[in-house]
Length: 341
Image (cartoon, rainbow, N blue to C red; front, side):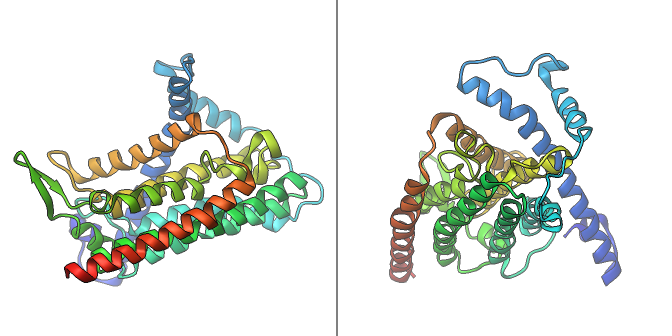
């Protein structure tokens, strides 16, 4: 799609160049958004929720804290503990950050801004995002630290308990849309669901199937490790969980991967439930970013307002609650679609 926007001729070489440019632009924009939201925004939002004063001394509105934190963290010594499994310990942060960035390859961001649009786009984005679980396990066991190991084991248990409901709930959207292609799912939400007082309400799947939307939002919180499901790194119990032994640039990668996954979750929710880049007046990319940031703000609200559950409660909610409800939603969706089609 970018190839057409740039006016490049046909051919494998030009398609590769267009894909490389698109990937670089998307990655740079996403990393900039993560830097603002993760370093500055997180502090300001949490302070607002808890009635405190956040960073305000470094530049206007404290924005230069982004530069200060980047210099501080990247200039620190990289401390490698004794007894670590060095290859796995080194690779784990890269695996976690890279898996989230790969997921954005198939997300339609509006105005032709989509790197790739395979027919199995939704399956692809879930597949690459789940690779992060491998990174969490690698970080946990390779750190030679009991708290890190517990964090890694908790991450496995949590992802198994909530990734299945997440995918099954997404499958109900596929039943409505009739396709796994991300652009097709967005296109299926362009019709008008109902008109109220002359205002057309679009057939976004958040309106068509609000139960599935709520389920997906809850399961997404567990997937990105935000309250009440931040069990793998619960600082009051296991120091920092799987990332306890990471410092300097490795800690930056671990921290970065968390926020990239939060925004990937927001991008998936925006695409399959909120019409993707659809919206009035403003360009599609602006609406897409607004929806993605709205999901991010929701995760920060839960972080400040919802208490952490115990590990046994987390597993019980996943297997006995979310899984059963997601299957019930899938069956109900299939029945409704079967009757109405």
